[in-house]
Image 1 (cartoon, each protein chain N blue to C red):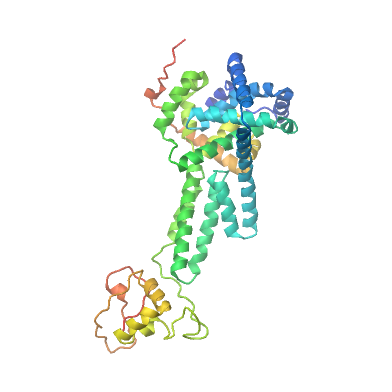
Image 2 (tube, chains in turn yellow, orange):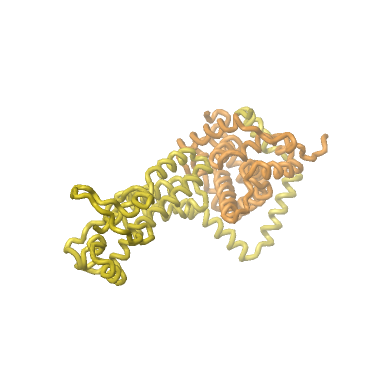
Length: 246
Length: 192
């Protein structure tokens, strides 16, 4: 068992060494200092300056965080965290966590999902680094982060275009994939081959794999019944997707 | 945990000022303490020696400016600690840092051959090295550097409350640490 007394005993004798040894070391240092080239002097000065930069970056990050400028805060905390400065790793993870949290309420899109995943994975990496450095609360934060960002959760749908179908670039002139899927197969295929909006929707909604055409299932006469979804039918992870063509 | 084992700020400040008569006096006063403090933090004792020399060189280069500092020694410890962490971060990125107990143990065996203080406190140093970095730094600066908790927090760039938290957690971890296995304690030093 190591106690504070052991630390004090070790501290009491930490300076003990022979004068001859110290003199020898000092002369070695003096010789090394005099033998330095100009380049080495500059390199050492640059290294010293970079130590100061860590602290400056940390302060900038704190200021940006106070101003609620989280992307800037993340940038500057990252500069300090890479060099293991103070608790910059934990602070960086918290900021990235907050940035990822903003995606929870954003409409679904491939780009948004990718950004969220990147932020979550980077935040988790820095939480792990902070934990290893001694910030044990980082473990709890990481657990919460992972629990919050379940990538199989249903997401908010993109807001509909204000001016109706076909009103601008990136929107389907026929009103979206759901309406296109009600067309004849040949027409729907021809349309999707040239409509970027439908292609995006198809890829996003089907998790990257276009749904295979299925034989229409006879539907009960009850019109209140919601038609089954393609991916759910095939046993995949539940995910909001296009309705089955009737 | 308190600052009772650390002398009064006046005493320590006075001692620090007395060392400023020349760089050589400063060097002889702090070099051994700095190297041994670094040996409790680094996973490689050679790095501790190198970093201590580089930090001392930086002090020498900056000597005239440091004469105006309240505590030039705390600047020395700050620079040395950050240099060591920079070096380790780079090595960690390149997967060239061996932080496991076995590597640290064998490194300590070698260090103990040339440094009697390391040999006498082998278990303590091994336990210090096994601590998370921030906890080791706070304990090292407080007990071996002789700094108050407030000074330690200032050197590390953290809040005083955070420093206290790391100190308490570090002391708890030291109490349950196992030290080095017996086999690793055979240092090869010839008994007196």
